[in-house]
Length: 452
Picture (cartoon, rainbow, N blue to C red):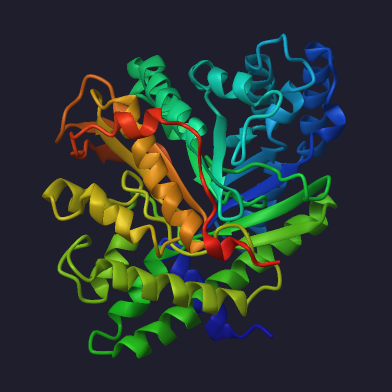
């Protein structure tokens, strides 16, 4: 039951603390679009996306007006395109990327994810062709996002895929070096990828999902920060309780928007992703939450512990507010998209090694991190492998979104604009991992993966 206090509090959160719905994402299965004739397949893909998502943006805008809740992005995720490319092996998969871009333009969405491949145990038909086409696809489109899953707790890590993705990330940066190396900002390399993730660039529509559904990704770092700052002398367990209560309120708003969108679009309601997703806006920062807990600056000793507390409390509070919790759900730490992270990286307090440690307890992984343009493909592959190992051993989703800044060095900045923000070029370890990466093969699954 709504009361005046709850309504006024929500209005204040929206106006003063950057509370918003980060995305409503429509997942669409393209399995019925598979065809050995790529031109026929592309037409089926375009027709299905544009018919299913015809009213997605309009619905989001109507909900914004109806409830006064900002919905920052309207997005689409589709079946991993490598599955469609397998049926037409002699064709260039970039045709699918152009089709996805055309569909995104027609529907008016901000991003369309699913130019993806799942290769955690090996490459099947269509996978290699799609992966090798990623640099061209991301260079020739603006709203299409790509992801590749190279490992899982049950299967281990496909090191051949890790080696290949280092090359692909570097090629994507070079292919878009005239546009602030934007290509790899739309590319995520996963371990333990989930099938119902509404957040880009890693969203794809899993084969276990229904034909069409609606997911909601909430936000609200500014709201959590403001709640913490009201209690400067609270104990750690009291902080956890305040965060849980705040996460509950944020998630209830996501539940409301998801239910309403599901009804208006006449498609099933998928999940609410509880993740705290920061933006470059002042105050809308996960780093500022950690600093509000008592750290002088994000990245100093104690940061990982504070992030673990935050992530756990967000999950516990949010899961009570919705029966449809899924996706990634926790706290994102994308450097270029978080004003506090940017400041900490520029100051030297936050380094790549500390970020890697933090990924053991946060939602995803090394996200939106700018590295020097002269980085080797082997070093990128090794960073990917390190992050995948954290996900594999800890049975959690981890990801890497690195942007090699071609022509730039440590301390320079890349300016993406919008939600992607701007990122300082962070230093890397210059010792070579090339021999290890060139061995290939597969890192076996950990012992605790055997659960049956």
